[in-house]
Structure formats: structure tokens, C-alpha cells
Length: 286
Length: 262
Image 1 (cartoon, rainbow over the protein chains, first blue to last red):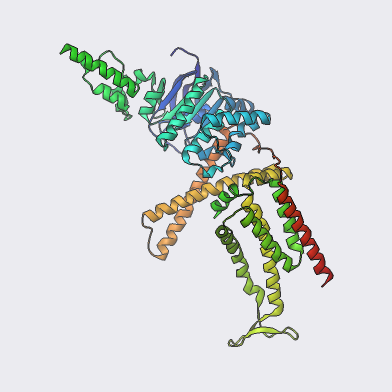
Image 2: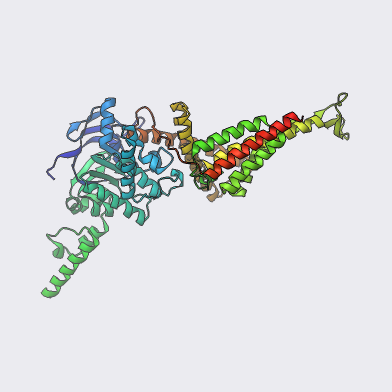
């Protein structure tokens, strides 16, 4: 992807106090602007730490974090501006839901930015509709289900219309319906030109959703590229214990003579079509 | 119980009534509860109960449970109010003398009256508080307090405490459930040790949540203050206004009657 980068790290090192190993170890990578990027890695591989760096909550001990091609500056004013441009959705929604009802919480950042009340109401209505939260605006946060809380947390970030959205395990613990609603919302946001970055363990989700993938291991960038490039190097993925997405695994389990020169299908529909073609070809030969 | 009250405050028939009107009404009734005759205090208790149970449709069970729990504290203090040791002074006729003991214990008519008056006042004041508690969600109470120019720092603390209350209750519930599922421990000492460990774990959990919430606040662009939504005035249906003003007028008239006739 030869595009301008939305987020980039150059030799970033970060040690948490009282730990032997650094959480980020000379981390270097770049995320193309306007992409749907999945950050893959085990627990403790540095995904959450990376996100905290991207919004300036943590500061690298070495190296540089860049947003929109510009190195982050840590002055109060610059950080406030950065947090308007980069939205972070935490894995645990309780971590970022502050006010008592979804409507109040979604409007939190907007009110802080000095927007007029009618505009706040309109923006909140828009994002709550997008994430299927209409009708829940007045319900206390602690009465919401986990899926609703996660979508409320995302709505709060979306309302700010950031250029870059970072989501830490957004679909973890969600039922299929909530996951679908969440992904639908993300698609709509991405369609508006926002760069969406998602940290996940779900290889199937990363494979079918992302158009750029970064693999982290022990705080280092092990690989970066398109899903086809990343999952073609399956031995490398297996060596770090990440496994393969089900569809790619199925595809690679077919005889190599059949699949040679073809990229693995990304969706079940694509798999079906490719398989039909292969079977038809095989049948005509025999 | 906290969760129950909170759910009811968001789902009651008086929810849409102006929070400022409800707060002013409760405050006025609270003031009256302090000053009027005990008979009228009992009347206030019943009237405010009717606002909650009949008008706001708060389940009687929830109301009774909370009222009973609060009255438990009164009940605990009743012996101190009623029971006297020694011999009644001249003119202080002891009733219900308990003569079986070496030390004479007795209850005076004045003590009984004091306890009765206190019960009437406590019940009336509590019923005013309960009216506000059961019919007005916390977020609207904050808006009212903001409009009354409560300092921002106090409002922020109240808001964070409110959020933490439920987070902590969830964490405590999770810990308790995990302990029960593992069978718990037998014996008083073991149980005490485990309770202490649970308290420690809860503290750790609280600190973790606190750290998380601070990061969340920073990530969402928090700088110096949490700006609460502005107060939005809502109309009060005429029937509620008439009921409230008529009730207050009646109470004042009755109080005037009691003052002139005693």
C-alpha cells in the first residue's frame, strides 16, 4: 500500500515499571490512511500499549510515534488536539463510559469541545442510529448489556468524528448479533474515509475484515502487509502460535497442485465459488 | 437494593415530571416535616407514600423494604430513648416497671412521647427523601444540583462515585459468586480469612478500575472538568400542581389549627 500513513511508529521502546521485558521493543510500522487495519498478536504482545501510545497516554522511552506523518508532541494543547483526531475504544467499555446514560456519555466529548447543544443532539442521534442504540439513550449505563456498552463506547468516540479510530478487541465477549452490529457500524465509519484499526485475536475476523494486517510479537512488528501476503506466510504465523483463519486453513489443505497461483478466499461465498471452479476444472481433466 | 432503586428511578410514572419541580416539592415537604405537629408529620408520611406508590407506581414491596431498612436504625436507637435505669424522680411516673431485676429499669411516658415524636419526624423526612429518590434518576438530580450552583468538583465526585458504586457492586458480586461456586470454606476462621482476602481483591479491583477510568477520561479528551448536560425544563401537568399546592395549603391550615388550639 503506497499511501500516506495514518499512524506510524519508528523504533518505539517502552518499558512498564517493574518488568524485565519491554512492552514495545524497537517497534516500527506504518498504517496506511483510510485502511481497515487489524493488529494481531498474543496477549502481552503490546497491542494495548501501542494504542495508549497512539493517543499520547503513554510516551515512548525511545523512538517516535507519528500521526498523519507528524511526530507527536506532548504539550497539553497538542494532546487535546490529538485526542480529537484519534479515538480509542478500550476493550473494557466500563473504562471509558463516564456519564450515567448513553446519550449523556456520547455527548461528553462534544460538549467538552464547545459545540452548540442543537448540533450535539443531532450528532448524537446520528451515531446512535448508526450503532443501533436508538431507544437506549435514556437508560442507565449499568443496565446495558455488554454489547450495548461496547457500542455506546464506540458511539462516544465516533461522535467526535476522528480521523483514526483504534479499537482494542471490539468484538471480544460479544454474541454474533452484537458482533454483526458492531462491524456494520465500523463499515459505515470506514466508508466515510476514517482509518479503522482493530486489535484482535480473532484470525477469522481479521482475515475477512481487514485490508492491512500488522502482526506483533513481544512488542516487535513481526509482519505487515495485506491479508493475502500475511496469511500466505502461514508457517511464520503458526510458528508464533497465531494459527490460520478457518477459510485459509481449508484452502491450504487442498492439494497444492489445485490451488497454486491463487490467493486464498476471504469469505465463505468466495470459497464456494473458487471450490466450484476447481471441482469443475478437475472434472473436465478427468 | 441500590440497583433496584436506580432501576425504579428510571422507570416510574413520575419520571417525566420536571426534576426541578420534584426536588422543590420534596425540599418544601422536608422543611414542613421538620416543623409541623407530629400528627401532620404522620399525614405527610402517608401523603408522600401515596405519591410514590399510587402516583409513581413504585412497587409497595420495594418501598416497604427500603422504609423498613431505614427504620431499623431508628429501632436500634429506641432502647436508648426509652429505657431508664434507677428510680423514677418525683413526678416522673415510671410505667412498665421491670421489677424482676436488681437494678430497677423503667420506661417513662415522656420517653415514649419522645420516641413517638421522633418516629413521626423521621418517617416524614424519609418519605420526602424517598419521593425524590424513587422518582428522579441520578443524572437529573445532578442537573438540578448544577442549576442550584453546586460546585463542579462536588458534582464530578458524585458522578464518579455513582459510576463506581455499580462497578464495585458488580466486582463484589463476581467475587462472591466465584467463592460460592468453589464451595467456599468451612469454619469461622477460614470464612473470616476468605472475607479478608475478598476485601483485598475488591480493593485491587477498585484500583484497577480507577486506573482504567482515568485512562479512559484522558483518551476521551478530558482536560479539567466533566461538562454535564444542561438542565432541560419540562412542563408539570396541572393535576400534579393542583394536588401538591392543595396538599401544602391543607397542611399549613391544619398546622395553624394545631398552634391556635394548643
